[in-house]
Length: 221
Ligand SMILES: Nc1ncnc2c1ncn2[C@@H]1O[C@H](COP(=O)(O)OP(=O)(O)OP(=O)(O)O)[C@@H](O)[C@H]1O
Ligand SMILES: [Mg+2]
Figure 1: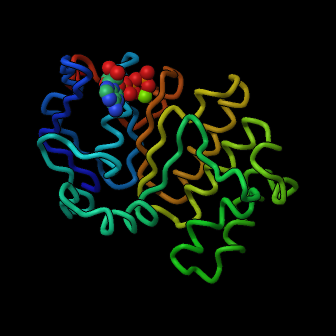
Figure 2: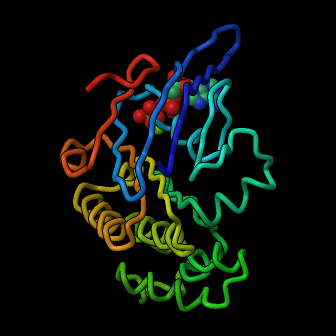
């Protein structure tokens, strides 16, 4: 298994209210698998993704990535994992506003000292039809172009796992479909493990497996 989550629990406290978002959730994802996570708004999908990817810590339970327990890793040890093992695609694109399209994509590769950062970034941009936008700043791009740029950035270090949280949530249906097609194509080509949160039943049908969160638990299929 490339991802193993064991008995993850997460509670948020707002004022004097405690909300148990995840209640002993266990999940295993195989290498190269395409897993869809579904559930109503507020069911804890984004929370689960942030625990699996080390962006946040569970109250209890363990997260094991490629056989390594990452639950208690320090920020310093998590940083290379986030930059090299994982790729992230979010609903709001999180591009650096002052960097061009090309620079945004190159950035994670440069961070790890990859001498081929520019070539890799250019190849990815060509792949998603953004060569003509390489010099544009994020605010000069359309929503669909921004998300294509964000996908290239997520892939530039050839991550073994992609976490995508409603990557088409801010796009119209035509653009959204195009983005998902690109993500799925790249997942197939590179055999990347893909963990995708989506509300689209159409996409869920193409997944290897779908899990549904409800009342803090994964519902039995
Ligand atoms: N930092 C936080 N502090 C307090 N409560 C939070 C925090 N993050 C999330 N929550 C609460 O936890 C619950 C789950 O949130 P989460 O974002 O994981 O849901 P989701 O399934 O991703 O929903 P959506 O489909 O709307 O994105 C919600 O009730 C939310 O209000
Ligand atoms: Mg969410």
